[in-house]
Each structure stands twice: as structure tokens, then as C-alpha cells.
Length: 171
Image (cartoon, rainbow, N blue to C red):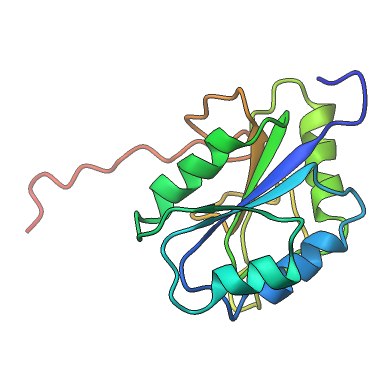
């Protein structure tokens, strides 16, 4: 897809996520493939998140919305703000393995038909990401990366959804 090293931005919607931001941002800083940029979209946090980001992570671009608009609007604002070929959407409580971004970008770059890669926390585990990219069907994603031009209706690595069962005649 890209003639040179692809660049990926990371967008993190945040609302009162100060307790998770240090671990999340440390893991991003330790990536074997550095992101082109990191954007935290703050939904009117009152827990000191903005002060922490300004003092400890001046390299992070902050979009302060001033009020809680909800996760999806915050995510959309962040996605609109980046200019990279790939964009990763992360929850604040995710601590990524050091090679996560490199592996998911590799999957997207290696398959021109891929529009996105989702990673989910396996059942009964911590939020530490130890695997990525196409490891089965995702019901909800803790971390997601896609081409910024993609229009995604179903994840590339997902199995087709089963056909709905008829419940006609059942109580």
C-alpha cells in the first residue's frame, strides 16, 4: 500500500482516565515502530488528565472538547484530526506489547485488501496486549487500527456473522 515505511497515528479518547494514561502512554513510547503522532481527545475530564498530559507528555497532541461528548464523538474528532495513512484507536486502559503497532501495520501493509485490524482482550486476562492482528473474531475491540481512507462495514479478520435464527412460534 505504501512505497515507504507506513506512518500510523494513535488516537485515544479520554474521560477521567488519568489512572490509566501513564501505562498506556509508556507502552506507546516503547513501541518498536514509533507512531507518527499520538492524539488524546479529552471529553471534559475533571481528574487532572489535561494537567498530567501537559506536564508529562508535551509530545502528545491534546484535543480538549471541554465536555463529555461520549466515546464515539471523541473518537471521530480524533480520527478527523490525524493525517497519517493508518490510524489506531485505543482505549485508555490498554497497555500494548512493544511490537503491537509494528505487527498490525505489517498486516495492513502486507494485504492491500485489508481495511482494518482489531485486537481484543482474551477472556479472563489483563488488558496487557500480548498478541494482535487477526486473532479471531472480535465482539468489541480494545484497540483498532485501520487505513484512514477505509470504509469498514465488517472487519477483514472477522468470520461472517451467523444467520439470524427464527424465533417464530416460540414463547
